[in-house]
Image 1 (cartoon, one colour):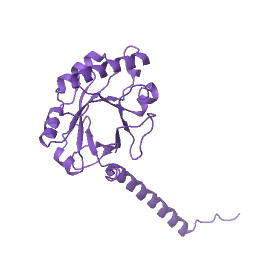
Image 2 (tube, helix red, strand yellow):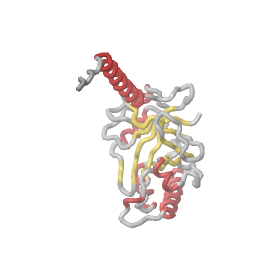
Image 3 (cartoon, rainbow, N blue to C red):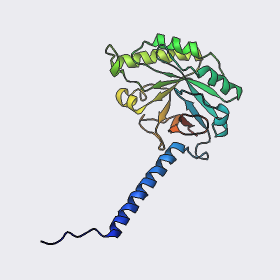
Image 4 (cartoon, rainbow, N blue to C red):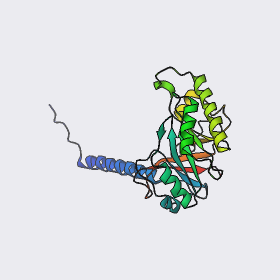
Length: 233
């Protein structure tokens, strides 16, 4: 019987080098995606969205990084609030940075309770940016079944109530999962805020006004990642 041929040492070396190159490339891509923001010449108006952070972000540092506006998570559903909202809101006002508020829509809760929660958190002020309703949570986990028609109906009621409070049209921040399920971005005529890291999103079927270009930007402004947002030129 013949002996099994041993693998040539140079083949092991090449395999090891290829593996090392793949690991290095993956690490670089991971680092790049976490620190990437779009070019300012393509998107001059850039800003940040401070979602449900557990720590405060430094608004002055955001401005130094190139943010010209900031949105802050204010409320969700009927009773959810962001504890840091008031402090972050006043910090943005102190730097004269345009600021707006975001409400997370809960399809399991009636619109009246949600708008009351939002109004408790967000003052009526014509200098604020248009308020945002974030559409991400599906009705799958509601204790009682909520039809797609009811999701749309309550959302329209909430839109009208917040717009009556603010005196200007809201912006709808629509996730891909929400749009795939309900298709409301195509039917409700409000400006859109879409999300897709690194690549322009097209899942709403019509142009966006705001785009989360990096869903988890690592920056000196916060110990936690933030959303980096650009406005359509």
